[in-house]
Image (cartoon, rainbow, N blue to C red; front, side):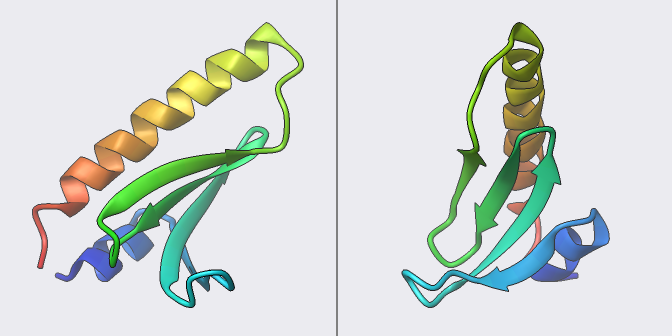
Length: 77
């Protein structure tokens, strides 16, 4: 299984980043998007905004999830 196949198997969707013209894999959460970039070997979270403590809690959960997914993805070619 490749890194891309793994990410797609756990619900990430492939999209072309118009700024870098590279493919990223993204998955939505409460008020943002978790992104994993295979080519740059990096992950990030894009947020709309944070208004409540509940959104901060969801951000922490999303960060832990994307970090776990990124680390697990590293096991594949």
